[in-house]
Image (cartoon, rainbow, N blue to C red; front, side, top):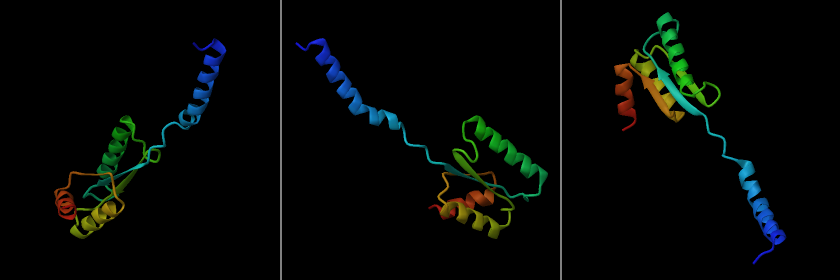
Length: 114
């Protein structure tokens, strides 16, 4: 049977060996890239309001633009060329999610990600 001082020594040695592992904690979470694509002009008041609401909704879920997420907004994608360019850029940047309600954008995404 171990005497109390020897038991304490074994505990302290074990705790000291594990301390560097617990001191590091979890690795920092990488920022998520979220693309937001809309067919309206960037100067359109309604488009800007939708973007504000989108950012607020994500923030309420814990996704803060600039902190743990980068929200990239692209406007004017009702034009097929601008749409293709915006989707291509977001795919090259390896977006974690691309949000849209534009049928042209959905179609382009389906074609580009098959």
